[in-house]
Length: 320
Image (tube, rainbow, N blue to C red; front, side):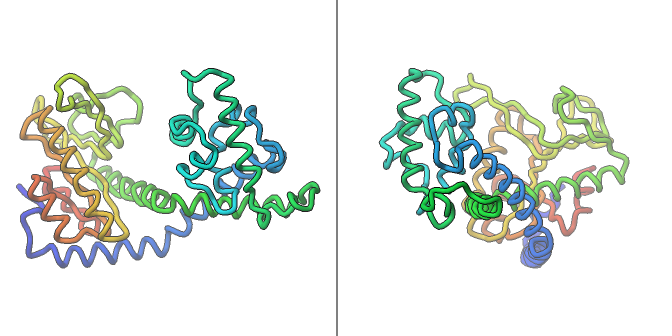
């Protein structure tokens, strides 16, 4: 039975209600999530300032101890430096910088002296371009006051958080969505499987559920295996032997443009799951926010159904 994908006459009303629900949440809770992240980030920036002697000693040794410091330093310049701009200015290895940014690690196959040489170039660029309006002690050539350090760290933290504002909000919304699913299931007698206990998705007992569970699939070459992370995996109470659980992806969006850019992600997951486990796979969405008719039509055509968060009781339509 289809829950919402075939109810096209209802889509317009659901879209409006979903947008309203997202906006109410955003106005009330998004600023809190952003502020909490900014507070944590400010402390991290202050620690980075201490380790670099307040941006006066950005040596290779600093990067070797704290390779994750690079984003903070990029946001400490005037103007702030994008990754590719830093690579171009310093004339350094793109792979090394991107490894530091994405994996918070230094390269392992590059010679020690070569790594130090590259790190020295990064440090020289940062020291030369450090923003004097933020780090006022640099031009004054004096030790910074405690208030100056905190003020500078707050500004850099704002820059860092501003560059990842959407992920911060999206993560907070996903956490809230999964909490809503958890509450709904537990009210109906379902039990959550603790994270990391080793239970596979196809070995779940009836009446159980789990969040962020990995489901293995094979790629198109039929040889390489990868894990697909699924937000919510639910085994109905009345499940029969060898029955697959239900898969749900928690999706939220604060604008229509972004959802239509990302709509193929779910279709790819559905195709991979069907290729691995057959046509009976049920991969569905749990939606809140800006999902227009174009997005819904695309997903419906791929055989993907959904539940709107503002009508969460539709989960029951899936036999849960």
